[in-house]
Length: 283
Image (tube, rainbow, N blue to C red; front, side, top):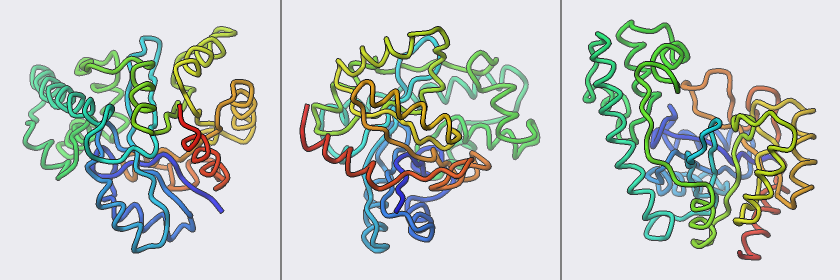
């Protein structure tokens, strides 16, 4: 049986509500799904209720964007319950930073001559946390861009004219906060780290495992079978659990399917069992 431990809903930048996401997971035959919205757990209560009705396991989680100058470093944190806690309390600060960033992005777009308001973006996001995909969607709706990818390529990606940096946690701090709250930190999609030189990935993993990292995404939605095998070997070398998921965002990431990703992903439920065992063993 298969699981998917990296998904997003309308609570951040996915197009499916938490209920819709869980229902799709059940129809796809998944036995468990982790909801890992960006910097927020607002969708977790709804997803938990839906999972109970559907008879599948819901792992509460979150995805964090970390301070990493060489590329993009993200941390998927699993079994993080909503409510007060070491990491949960910091999430509130991160969300405020995200809100300020969204306003500044819209202001930059206005300076570029694009007629877009933060109110339009918020309406597009609905009850969820506003992010760049919602800004991109408004740009597409108003005819400024051909599609979501075009909006990022032209305006919103790092280095483009409307990109705005936002405060992020340092990797070791995020891992420490996650472990302090009894959660399981997993390094997400390591191919986005921008590490090319020999030994760079090994040096990083040695550093992060020393800080308490538990897993690394090896069964990722965009990796082919050879790529997954190579990542599993790397995980085994450093004593990390080879986690995985599709990184599903619905229509905001066309071609990425829940449970299968882009290239026939299948994350065995043994991965979830291994992560749960690491959680029980504690820091």
